[in-house]
Length: 222
Length: 230
Image 1 (cartoon, each protein chain N blue to C red):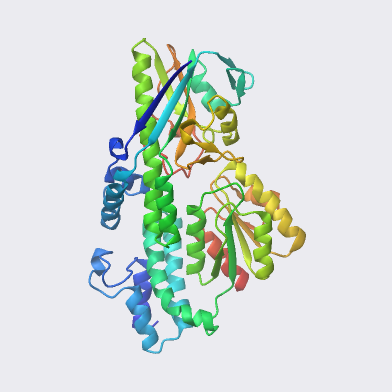
Image 2: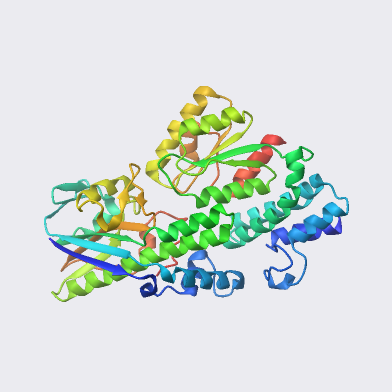
């Protein structure tokens, strides 16, 4: 990996957003993800290389550290913020189609449930895994999931719920999606959800942490 | 039945930076400088929040049914399950409570999230959770003092959704209160709105006791409060 991509990956992994950002203290006054991504493009590094060789592996390290409980949610969010500052420079290339994402991921908190933090964390990590995320928000009905899937037929769907009461709505949503798009891949997650429940309602995958979802998506594309 | 209502300003709750850091997961030795400044800023910003409310109602018409681990309060039967049942079964009366930190903190959290400032949104969310818990602590302290003045004790507070008590039972709990109690509305899926609200039950009697450590009784292993609030 080139020196600049290595620095960019470190900036994302440790949440160094830009030069002005005081965090982390040992990287104070150094360029952050914002400046490094911009410079990498100016030096002729391709957007694909930036994504594949710096941002995606850096976020994978962050996700693994979170799974191992070596970091907490705030550090993960700082890393995501750094990643977003780098991704902003790649946006024109995504829009022009010059750089392709690995796929599309539709995510939402199921109907009846308004909790969004867990869903946002997963969305952020999946975006960091190189996927385009279509976030439908909270209190999302089966029909809304289905409509999004019709607009993006190859997308993987992620359902989130925090309550045992709303977890039951996952079953209905999975049934509706399966009725129209039987081959759709559906991931489920949230505090009350288990692998047993995932199997019971006919979803494809459950992960107790965001990185598990990223790894599952990686398997789908490899 | 005896009712008591409370209203606080955010400042009254005396939330501290270290308290929020603790809930975020940080230990004494962790580098957390980057969140300390932000927590300080958000606690300061929150000082304009008022109308943080709590209320409890005491019910003397209480029957316990050991065979199905339930309690009947004013002819409403709650299936509180084994853990909660065992903690409150010796109560002579019970207090049903509702507390809310109001809408504002949740709105600020969501606004920050929408602006993709996830850390700010997340910390606001944790501050909201701590604010409502602090409100419940004040309410519970008041109840304990009132009970003590007539030589009674109280149990811990227990809420639907915890210790195996189905969160859907919150609908029954709300039937014991007048409509729009503390301004809290309940959705069909038993979600309270404002979301930074808590409801539950506290046992009162001569032969009940407060348990200083309750996490061991609960099976929510991933709860962010597990062993943090001792």
